[in-house]
Image 1: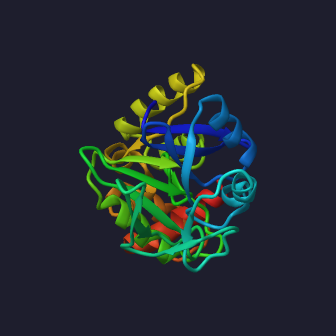
Image 2: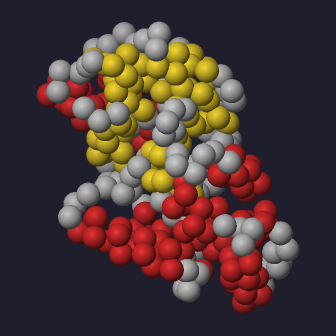
Length: 261
């Protein structure tokens, strides 16, 4: 099986299964336990752990259903309320599962105040980031702060360019419309829209994301560029907002803009 398998849930969620060895898997953000248990049974897989990025219902509500059938550890952010949690994690913690598979914890607050991500290093790194970074977008702010989200995205951007990013929602196609609105002359965005539309037309998912693509097309990772700063300044002037003067204030402006787009 592939190293990471997407199980669709709700309208546009993905619950990820990470293959560790043989028929063992780690479950990431099980918002609904029923499709997970069915997939495990249909494919004769044994879960060895659950890892959770944050406390929103569509990431945690399936945990107790799974624990009714499997006695496995549940890892989650130290400062958030996670049902069934057995191991509280924070920045730079190194989780070792089945004695061989390791995930490094990154604190990435913003969507929620205690949000974490899990990074697996290797020839091609993998980041399971919940609702922090999406295809061509980022999460809304629920209990976190704008500046926190900006710095969390910068932390992700500092990972190797070939990192594969496994987020929890299929938002890429819609997010690219906003990206194109901000940068209509960005050829990388136009090309990505064509690729994404073709994938979705064939029923394929757009995840994992490649970090290098995000840095070229995701406006929330491009707040330092003249194009995004100019677009944000124009929007602020047109809507009576304070004009952004640096990448952080540019991020605040375009996150506000996306909320109303």
